[in-house]
Length: 393
Ligand code: NAD
Ligand code: MG
Image (cartoon, rainbow, N blue to C red; front, side):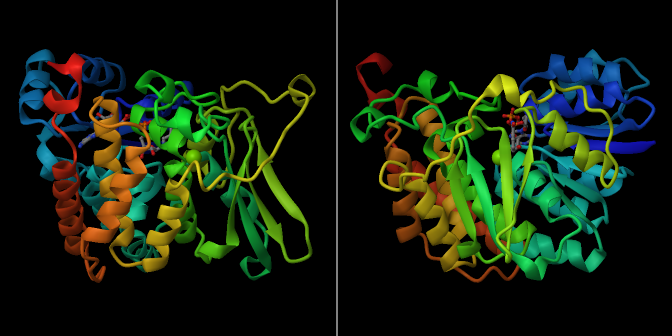
């Protein structure tokens, strides 16, 4: 029986993970659950269903509300950023699924690594911010960082049983998002609803917008660099609108090995939970004859500048990817709130990369400081809702 702690339990990845725990109740039990706390009723339902040892909510008030909803005996209830860290560090678990969205996952995820827990990593923003620190901390303790991101799970599987020294390139596939064929003029006017209408995957709002700008793929290039210790120029992004080939690895002899499957995060989540074994995932099966064609094309750097910004930050190194990430989080939140247009997202990120001083990534504090400074700067560049437009007043 594996005890699983889930950070971001009420989110898209968290809930899919819990469905898998239900499907394989002889294999998994729930150790800890963490979430922001915006939906206390849902967390109470999850506690009744999965009987975790402990729950951590970011919001103190939400923790108290949860206590009122759950009569004793109830799980240990923790709150605040320190509560999330404590959940990862102090509550025994065999695997921690890191599936908070954004930089908020950094300290708890590091705490899980430092406590020696196997990590199933969905929260790519943490690796973008502190990839070198996280991978070296995991290496020191001999802990696997198992990818949950579908592309990285695919690459991980394509690398299994092969020599790393014989890898020529990683071919990272991207759906292209809802605006794959939109013109630049159309992109400047897209609505929030259109950006949230992803053609192949159902995910949380932030990653769905990232998929529309292609920043998600930029973050994934950085994620691949750290997870697989590969030079960034060896990671090629290929747009594949059907989201069936989840990524590929090309070897020096010209052989290309791909991993395919339906677009269901259950498959990579379950593989991270059961690695190196496999279980029959309750997911639709791939029927290639019904699909017909799989197509591939190059991404357009002109319409989707986020991809180049991410590569630029990776090349600059140190805390530049943390600046990129923080600026993107604030810009995406502002887009979702109707405060800025879609094409303002890459502009804000470029401005942050120019204006926030980079510094040596000599510890997690540097990362946390740069993250805060960037958020402050970018917030200052965004008009308040009241100024945004006629409808807002
Ligand atoms: P989501 O928005 O659906 O869920 C986010 C979860 O994190 C929620 O439980 C929320 O309560 C919690 N959370 C958010 N901010 C928090 C904070 N400050 N403190 C504590 N908890 C907080 O997001 P998602 O789509 O499940 O994505 C989660 C992570 O997984 C992201 O990093 C995303 O890039 C990655 N990912 C998601 C998918 C997918 O299919 N959804 C695929 C690949 C990678
Ligand atoms: Mg992905």
